Length: 292
Ligand code: SF4
Image (cartoon, rainbow, N blue to C red; front, top):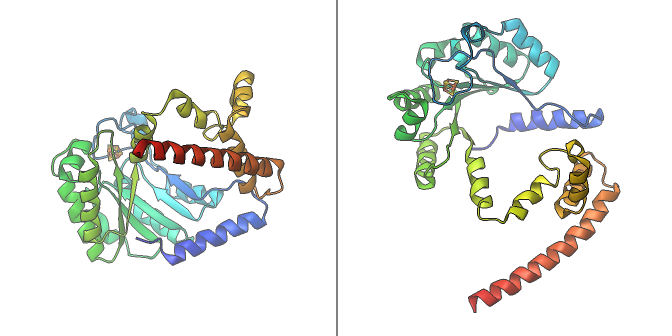
C-alpha cells in the first residue's frame, strides 16, 4: 500500500522548499474538523458530548479555504464529527483539490452511498472509512449493530467507482492481535489502498513498558523526548542531564535542525557508542550464560 508517487514528490518538494527558506518548523497536514455533530454516538467520543450550540456550528466553505491558505500544508485531513453531514463538504473537497492539496476525507460511511455522486475520483482525494476491526469489534466500538456491514458496502462502492479508499482504525486496550491481524488481511484482500491505526501504538508501548523497571520507564520521560526539559523544575533538569537518553535526544534535535556540527552530536556519538558496546557485551554474556 504505497503512498502515491505524486504525493511523495509534492511532500518532498514542500520539505525542500521549507529547508531552503530556513524554516525549522512547518505544518505537514491541516487537521480540519469543520463540525462536531455526528450521526453515531460512540462510547467515549469526546466530540458529541458538546452542547447543542457547539454541535450546531459549521465552518463555512470560506473559513475552510482560509485555514489551508494560512496553514500552507500540502495535505488536509478532514474529520469531525461526521464530515458528510456538512452540506458544503463536496465543495470544500473540490476547493482543496483546486489548490493542489491532498485531501483525506474521514467518514463513518453511513451517508457515503447517498452522497458519493457529489464527489469525483481524483489522485489527490482519498476516502478514509472509520472501521475499528471486524464486525464484532467495530459494531461494539461504535455502539450500533450493522455499522460494519454498511462501512464494508461503502468501501466496495467507493472502490467500484474508482476512488482511492483507505480505512482508519482505532484499536482499544485488550484488542486480540490475532483477530486484528486477520481483519487487516481481509481489508488487504478487499483492495483498500491504505490503513491507518491509532491507540494500538499506545497499547504496544504499555505492553513493552509494563514489565520494565520503573527506572527504565522514567528514562525516556527524563530525556526530554516527550516534552522539552526546559518546562521541568530545576532539580529535574539536573537529573535529566545525567540520563544518557537525553544526550541522544539533544543530538538528534541538533541533526534535525540541520546543525551536525553542534557539540551535542559528537558528545552523544562518543557516549552512546561506549554505552552501546557495554550493553551489547553485557547482553551477549548474559544470553550465553542463560542458554548454557
Ligand atoms: S464516528 Fe467518530 S465523531 Fe462520530 S461518534 Fe463515533 S467517534 Fe465520535
